[in-house]
Amino acid sequence: MVLRQDAEKRGAAIKAAGDRHAPPDEACKLIAGFAKAEIKMVKYVETNSQKCGIPPEIAKQLRAGHKNTEAMQQRVCNVAQQQQQRGPIGPSLSDVLGSSSALPEANVTAKRNGGTTFDTLNGNVLAR
Image (cartoon, rainbow, N blue to C red; front, side, top):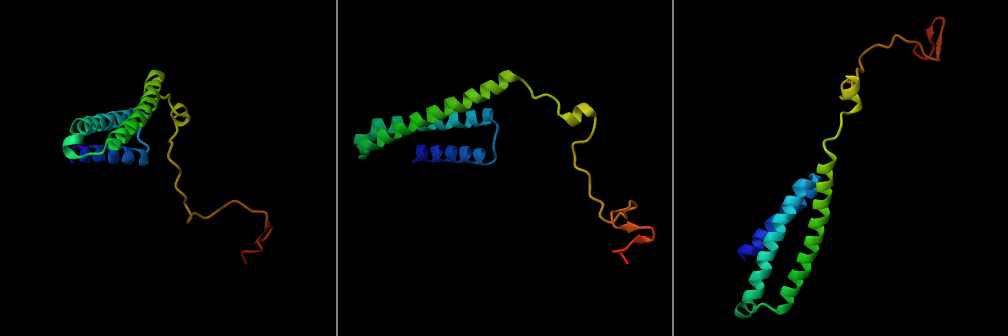
């Protein structure tokens, strides 16, 4: 039961990381931890299946699930490794130009001094 709870906790951590779009190197570490917990559970089921009355299909299902976990771990860790080899991302356009990347604040209360299409010699006809 303790092994199962550990695997469930690690699986929930992977799901949370996926929901918040964690970087691949963090996801790789989380999946590696889950794979270790999963293999402990598989070994326990295989060694204690007769003593605990666990059907042999459970061990087969756990092995198949672990193969999927290993495949996912390899894909995610390969992406993480490729990102590390590329190095850090270069400066943004606003960094190069020396400007702020923040959006300007909208000033709705400021009065417009410029004219519009509807302005005549005596002012805006629509505003009267």
